[in-house]
Image (cartoon, rainbow, N blue to C red; front, side, top):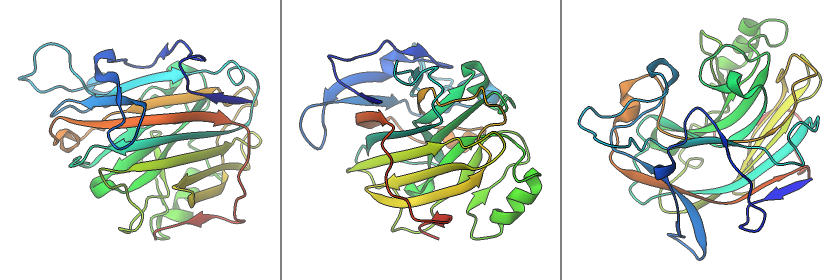
Length: 283
């Protein structure tokens, strides 16, 4: 199984919770050669479930360019019963990019698409493992996964939350932040390309799930004892392309007009060697 981006093998995109097509353009690589996908984030925009998908400046007129979100479902993966996949891509933040307090980046997904939108509380029927950038360019895996972990969500949270903030567990069934980086050595910096690789192994229902993240070929997160699905009917179905400034706080919208760029998307079933045990860099 392998899917890569190319003009010759392009796929029709499926709607996510929004597709601001005017926010997307093919442009020349700002720091290289060839064409790349550019995403425009309009000044002051943010996206979150509580505002019905988006919040735009009151002064804005016309389209609100808040980023983009859609699903990619390769024929070799979608509804094929896959429990392992790796997603690779490269991301570039424009020089001077203001990270504000955070925003989303693409990840893998599976299950019922409509249940993956926002804080729906339907993690029993889907999962997603998008990334987030945080203030000053720190990053993490931001996962929508089942609320119950290791026999009890509170037990699972307590197991990690007090250990260098490896996992931050909210009080709701919304996203779970896995592997938040906390040192300057492990954060995104504007003006350069970063290679992202994310591996997801769903494991068995209610046990043995694994999420691993590499940035520039350095393994920065390996979480190998989490519940990623509660039903054997949930499989990996594709990529959830999702990028915007967001969540709930208005502080997410404290940024000017800016851009990110993406290239070299690839989904494969090839596995990369992983260190044993649970592993977090930058603690």
